[in-house]
Length: 148
Length: 148
Length: 148
Length: 148
Image (cartoon, rainbow over all chains, first blue to last red; front, side, top):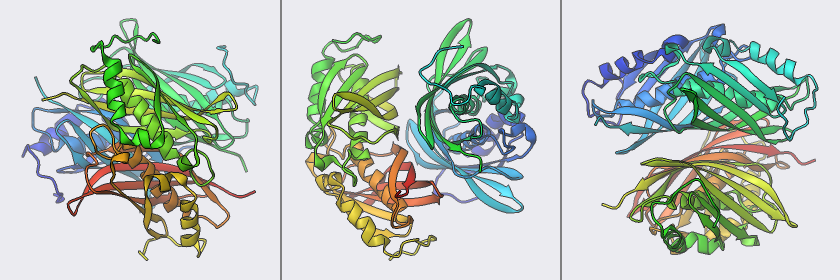
């Protein structure tokens, strides 16, 4: 497991985060999977197929956003207590290059983990002929919802 | 056709925008369709199914973002000359309420149409038992790419 | 007073908001004042002077952002109970035209007022020879801090 | 001079950027200065005084945004040819901690330098009793305006 600066509150965060991810019908529909998890970090990958494209045949910006949103959300969730849930408050994403390649890699990282709000950044790269080309950058705010 | 403040440069914008939309594999995969088009305006709808959900069963924030991104992008494209293409530069979206209902309705509107950049806002509502509940708000920047 | 869709929790919101505004050294330094207040709405105006300019002599984007941030923040505060404070979580602003004119007018409006988070939009116009020209658009998230 | 991955088009970028900064009345009003410049990088500092505060006595979010906007804008300008100007298209900023301290330090970095658009991130820290505490994070889009 990657080492990060964060100490998780829940030692079983890995199983808990993967179980939540597996309940996301949208990630299954797209074909996205969790590549790696660490405290405050989540990497999601998505192989290309035409069903994920925009009008020029590249990954659709909305699809790129969808896996970036999940990567940031699950990076946040790794640090929550086991009873808490995560919701996206908002995000902003720049599409910095055409997402043209064999697969997307979205790496979500917690920048600040507060009592109520968590701030993440997500870097999305597109793998093309073995090279990772940065294609999107997200800054995201999430809220922790504690069980009643 | 809805009346708007914009005069399209291309009288055939409707057919051109729908042809581009139909080339977006991602919109077909999700099941999204164009509900209405007018100069500077595009409404996209998406019926709910479990394959579009996040972990609590609501529409995934990334799916909401994907149709909002297309609604804004095609609102922009209605005003472009016939030879120009549109790309998303960036967007920011607030998820203001759980997207819990039978279908999403994303209404994209051009706020400013410049020579190079277009700014749109997109309001997304969720239809639940006949009522339209606002669930997301997007502010988006797009760039016009002229054919060489 | 302008009529809005919101009912304030604190009947004395007007005096409370103005007192808070008057404690903002930054608004005094810039020369900004509250033009009008209503439940869920706050309009701030700022006359031009060279000390507010960027390198081309227009209002600096950061100055435009500063009064827009306050307009949204105080729109949110109008709806809070008297003991609560407001903090900006984040905002996104598009500078849609050069802010070239005699004064800026920033109109903040609450879009959603939740228990913890409030979402506002702020429209900034620049008055030039009697005409109001839209120059910036902000989407903002604020948090309510309750007194302990 | 700090070493960065970027090669400037204009060998005299340092003098050119500082001259532009000195034409920003707003930076002079606030008391901000350029701390360091390198290709694709600009650091701006701002000492605290009450005239820069919000209602609780900390740096106003709008003031923090103003220097962050300039730090990103001038990071972009370091890479432009000598005849080109820079304008902010839009930015998004998260205020991640109260800006409570003796001075702000805003470090702008170019993430992608395109022909028309440049994307920057800006990290703002607040110096408090010798320690640098991260207080804001900005993601920004800028446009290059070539002289006619």
